[in-house]
Length: 428
Ligand SMILES: [Zn+2]
Ligand SMILES: [Zn+2]
Image (tube, rainbow, N blue to C red; front, side, top):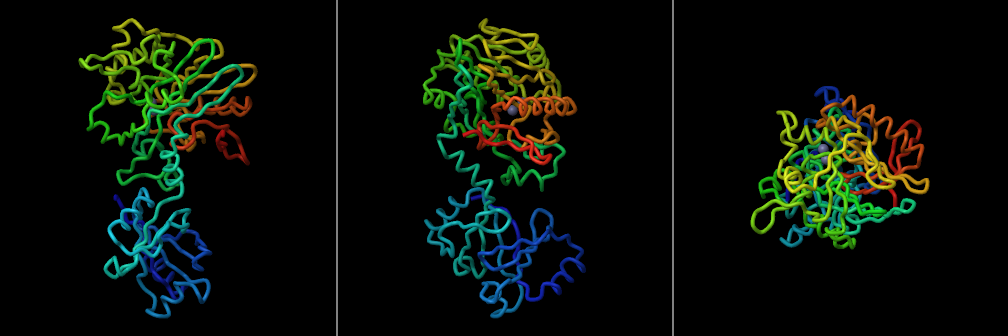
């Protein structure tokens, strides 16, 4: 189990006196207090680097903190370790015969799930385990096989969101100029500061059968999988098969762009070590400018482009380059956004007055819905900003079903503005 120190809990008898020391004498900042009604306690957090001090003030005489102070006086009360998966942690401890105060995780402060370990098992220290609730929402989505395959109808078209599993990228990079205290509430980071993102290609069935993007694929090494925390336990071949779509059913593979988390699945390595197109009947459509960029990389974008993902397409004659915002098949049109890379494109889908859009890396997760929440990977952030404003306006106006390729929990939803705040309402 990986754990990081989250905070140190200090039981206080006289809050004003405690603040005079911790806030005023030490000069620490203090956050707004939080009431934990179930424990009859008020928590005051003071950030100290990556961790916090938590001053615990009893709000009723029968509170555990009141009893603690009465018995032993004010002082160190507990330490809290943050874990990625509290249910797994509790199960592991139980299996080792560790005595737990909470056999089941329960709601705690700061929108979290917590479980206390008995001091008898922790050498005299009360140890609290903690996991943020958003983290557990993401985990249950990852574990839920239904989240990997979701079907939608847009007019005459059938849309099937499939999955190539999960990838972890540095949270700081994924949110660029947004400070960590803000983004980690929406996308909790692991011990290596990485956030979990899905890879969700989209199958569109209409006049023809089209696949947009194809995840990271199977060609990369164990080391690569480790660096990017790749989890392909339910990969694209598996989820497509479960959705009833065979590789030979795909007529067209459409690339939003050629970064490895989107184009990796375009090819595979056969038993003889040769790299072949994954979809044997498909024409692969790539924007010409993106093809040029991917085949002429520079220091800044080189790590994102792996030639085995796309060069074999040209060699086997299945590559088709498009120059403009073309219609790929009836109801399916690409639109260049730039921003993320110069020729990044999104896909607009329209049938019988209904619209959907595949936002790719323009709005990769729900957390990226606000205009300025954009990735530090974007090569042209001001272009991202302009494209995103226009995209959101249009999506709201048309009630567009938007597909979020990298969101760990939500495949698609509707963008809304509420009192000046942009939110996404997940589609069921
Ligand atoms: Zn990308
Ligand atoms: Zn991406």
